[in-house]
Image 1 (tube, one colour):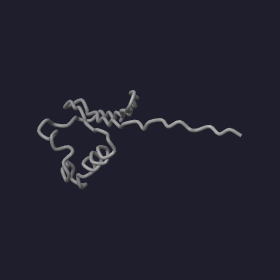
Image 2 (cartoon, rainbow, N blue to C red; image 1 turned 45 degrees about the vertical axis):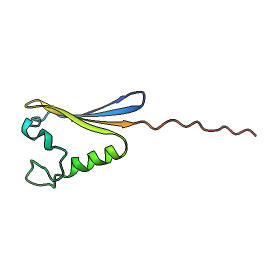
Image 3 (spheres, rainbow, N blue to C red; image 1 turned 120 degrees about the horizontal axis):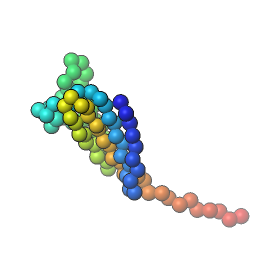
Image 4 (spheres, helix red, strand yellow; image 1 turned 180 degrees about the vertical axis):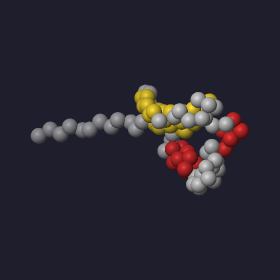
Length: 90
């Protein structure tokens, strides 16, 4: 897995890139659905919970995928405004 970070003016984008087999087209629309999994074990709630938490914080999550090549997940989060710290005079 390769992880990269790109800063924009008001947000930051995290990219998680793998070299797996990609997500088949027929299940791409189910990736963020609670209780959906392609694995023999696990609950299938990880990406659904992640999506809800990210969106609750004002962010977005999405992916692009190519079968037999791999998948990249992206998380974009807003940056908090920088507050100026008052200086004290003595």
